[in-house]
Every structure is written in C-alpha cells, then in structure tokens.
Image (cartoon, rainbow, N blue to C red):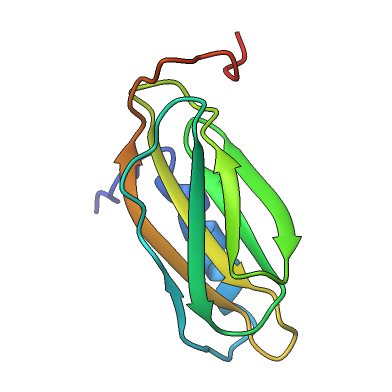
Length: 119
C-alpha cells in the first residue's frame, strides 16, 4: 500500500494541530482570515474565543513561533519572499483546554520594500 506524500509545510501544521489537541478538551477558537501577505509589510492577525494565553505559528519555508500573548490580535511583519506559500495558525494555551485554529494558506506577493528579508 502506497502512503500519501505530504507537502513539506503540511507536516509541521499537522504536528502543531496534534500537539494542540493532545490536551483533550476543545473550545471554539475563530481565527479571522487576512486579505494578503505582502513582503516586509505588517499583517494584523485577530481571533476570538477560547481562553488566553495564545501563541501563533507561521509556516512557510521555515516555522516561526510568535511570542505568547493574552491579547486577541497580533501584528507580524511578513519576512518571507514573494512566491512563498504561508500558513498561519493560532492556539489557546490555557491549561484547561488547548484549542487550535488556522486560516487558509496565501502566497506572499512582492512589495516595494524587501529590506526585512534575509539574504
């Protein structure tokens, strides 16, 4: 039997999800979609539901974990080059329940500034 092959960014997302679900209890967490990711431009992520603290993961050609927060929004500067498919996920780290939500993947588009990109 041939097993399916997964995209290199899908596996970390699945691991992130499984870690989130391991605690057992599920609360509703709604992650608001974003319109676009533009090179070196800020993106405001926002969500509602579940309980703080929250943390976020950004999955592209590498995994970025953003600092935990009690707020229901977080700004991130897009530091992936144009053409990179990026996925974002947020989870509640509340000890009574760990809840996970993600938004659809988007491809980073070119901006007027690429100074934030590492060479």
